[in-house]
Image (cartoon, rainbow, N blue to C red; front, side, top):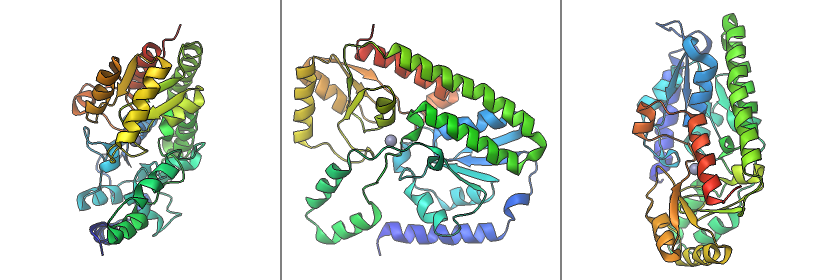
Length: 328
Ligand SMILES: [Zn+2]
């Protein structure tokens, strides 16, 4: 048994233990507010915007932590079990949530899996990730890796397509209304207002990225922007795959450096929560500059304290893309 399997067993046990002590629909709630627990930051913002004063929203993944590397502690499982609603992405974004809940009760009404309401795109790095695993020289480890880290069928970064976000907010509002029918009109009005912001964002991206010198944008981080590229007819190229855990190969570095030069690209993107040294290396090799592009899966501690919103981050990303793609 490997460590991950033992961890899952422990988590399942604690989930059953804590959940056995509470009734999901009628939990004691000192503040008379719904409690919603979310994994990534955009789902936190969506829940908070729908619920506002009537809802207590908890962001499970601490600010500053890269969301792909998060594993819950038993206290996190207790937090989820004591909540009225748990909101997560699914599709490989939180493999631990899949292991923990879906095997136990897939129809549990207190779970909201956002990817069920998204238009999914296939994992474009799948072949590449499988190729990497073949080169693993430790055969025993390889079996464990293949068992617990299946190359995912779909890209989990669904929140970087604003049309997905609109559907997620609509469906999330329905679930919240079912749990707390007394405040339905309040939630619906809040959701409509937030959806307007998402639709404006979508319009601005379409308008302002429609006439640019480049379609390619190159990231020294992981491949988080496939949905954004897909929606606005761009081409996202990243040094690592869908999860930022892998080290880039020298071959991949070489290909990206050649592509940057061949396309006359002037800016390389780096990510807030990842080391920017790869982007800096590519920029030095190609005589280009670096710019920030934030996938917003989580915020830095400072951004969280400054109450930066998902909408703010997406506006900043648009400005950054307009510079890098040389838009008119
Ligand atoms: Zn990611």
